[in-house]
Length: 399
Image 1: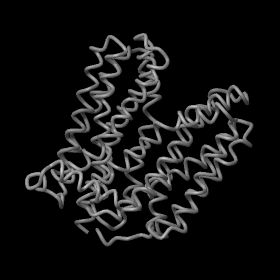
Image 2: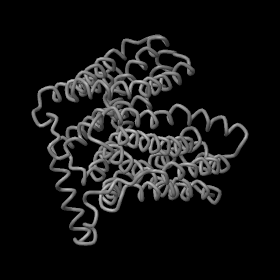
Image 3: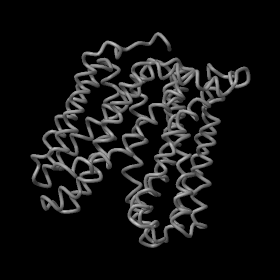
């Protein structure tokens, strides 16, 4: 009983820290960052690079920071991540050109590259029992930031300039030191290897070991496909719904808010379902539901129909995402959890970067219906793969 209470305390502390830094970080994205870049004279192409460069940082560095946390401790790297979250926003006062903003966003991206895989590994390391449920509750904190941050940033911009808003972002991030300092460190099972082996050789060997787990590529492919679809929707659904169908802009905005809200509410429920009925059947069913929902998107013609689809998409995503993370974590040894979450995050970020690009390429040669149907069919194919593929059977031998 005492151990369960300690696990729950650590879960809520890391979730509180994640909510604080991610809410602040998301405040610095849309609509704040594009407006700030435009005010500095950034052209459309360079503005797009500025918006995406922080995500690109994590493509290469997430596995490295995850690996380091496996060796030297999760709490240490969470403190370093919070430090980057907290200090970097104050540097926006010194940005005078688009090039300087680009460079600073590259540095700011280090924060999520560190904090993302390390916190996921920490939550997975708390205990074997009810991992999916804990990932669901932890995902609640992450998703909550997407609901609050854009509105908060837009409100702040009505009476503050962008650099001042970034100062507020830094102050909010500083608060995350409190729950992280209160966290109990979980002793990494691989601790000490950095002192006894060649660091580069040890890192490459561990990457090879983690990458040899077949479920990484299944889990990564699923997440990448999901994010390609959802980020393509974020880029092109407003154009499709508003300009093609005449849906009002408020409803288009509500589509994404309702989707994130349903995602947030479904995460703990999805984790409980996976713990009770098994990861593979729940994941397969949720992916099938998600693909079916996207498949009917071309048939939506009114605002209420779009909002219903948003709710269904968000709910299915809330089941899928924590279940994917748990499915992967159960097939990794604890000593490789940080690196494994970093590798998964790298593949995930590829989807986030590629989504708008792939969507644009499809629309260059085809229609919106083709884009939606292609995304849906790919997700349905993944659902079938999960249902029949033997390597994805749940295996806890390593843990």
